[in-house]
Image 1: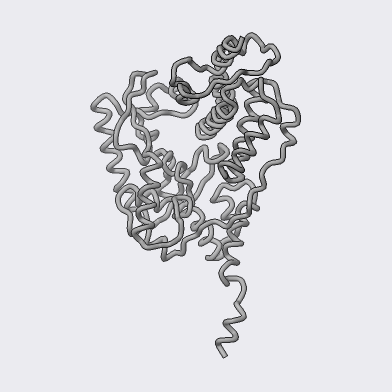
Image 2: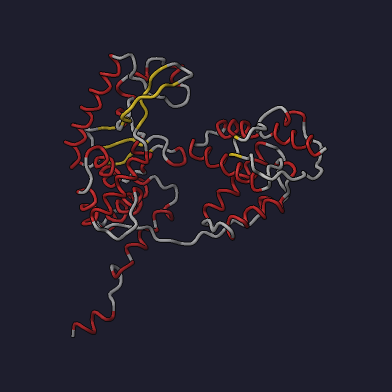
Length: 366
């Protein structure tokens, strides 16, 4: 009986009996008896829960990053409960999982909330069996933290410690207030060199926005695009030169992927083989290469702050407010839906004596 239930759980979750499964290596995992459960729908025994979850996420146009995160949390949730099928678990089991994340693993509040959102999506949208009062589970309270911000001199030092393409990427992160993936996903058609503007497509939340392009980077951007154009021309001569296109544009416009306007501004050094189409394509630069370059530059510049790629965006917003620009303008450039999100940078401005004069200054000045 136990073996029969175990096989049902394995089939439902898309697992195999070998050691390697979508949930990781389980050859040494101690199997435990699965308690009796309610009969499941026949359809659940014929399809993978993870595959169905991916389908539901893509149907709702969730980003690839969210898809990977949600599927990963469902895997961890099921592994935590010793590979029992989610329909065998209850609200108490979910609370136990969340408590283990917070107490045993010490994850942050935002990470715990993401795990809850992923499991909630699984039950509500995939299994169509929402847990009782799962919506009433209290979300972890996120602490109010101020962002790390570099001074203008620190930004200059970090950029001065960078070279080549990574330096140009970092320049746009700071000069245009971009997130790192927003920058790396730029296509050549998104740059308006004449107006010194660039269009961010499908940013966070799937929103488009327009932001400025720094005039000081004109020469570097022009030289970089000339190099990228020569790379694209060589790819075309070799029968390659394609990039991936969003949504179903590749079916509607079969040759668009080879056009210059769709090429990535920051292409990867190597091409890759795309099995469904049988083509060699070129993706954009990987985010880890920029993160590593920024990390090395921060260390080389001697800055003690834990600055990252996103610190350039925080510094962009703070320095604009320091220069007297309206917060609504900054909100629009950053792409924030709510001005309260942008307001955190006013707290940064009030920190460290910018808004208030320390009483010791008057005391020691006399």
